[in-house]
View (cartoon, rainbow, N blue to C red):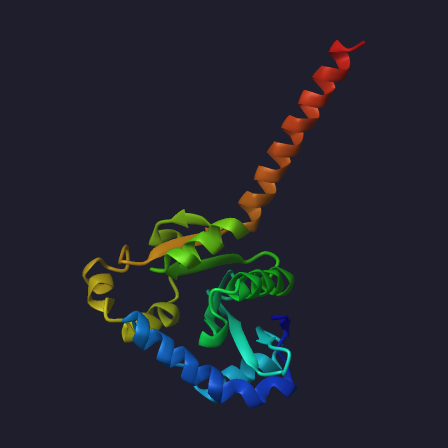
Length: 201
């Protein structure tokens, strides 16, 4: 099966209601709550170009994810990752995850991108992209974000720990740290190459 994965826009708004229903159904199956999103909210993300949608060969909804920004755009979260049950275990989630990450980097190049999840599959996908496990203290302190956890059955655990820990794992992609890491890595390779060329003379 071939999928079209693109930045969502006005023409995709017709899929908003189906996406919201699938998000809610998926949360019930997992046994954890998520912040409910209305079709109007999803449509707004599409119109703003802050969402990615996957369509199958018949142009039917296959998957979706959107961007939320927090703390005056210093932090960004890729939220609402959902795949139509018909296409799960096809590798589509990985493709959507990478596409929404690329879109986040393009729209918010200086923002830290974070994720909290209990899903082993999502943890693996995040690690492949470049996220690192972190404590909750390194994530946004925006009350609006944490308020979204109220729908989760584990919210009382988060409250009891003053938002410092829960059953979710926090993960973060920091572009500044990544930039420094790449500089050190490239500098080390350059030094190794310089030593090898010196020895060969």
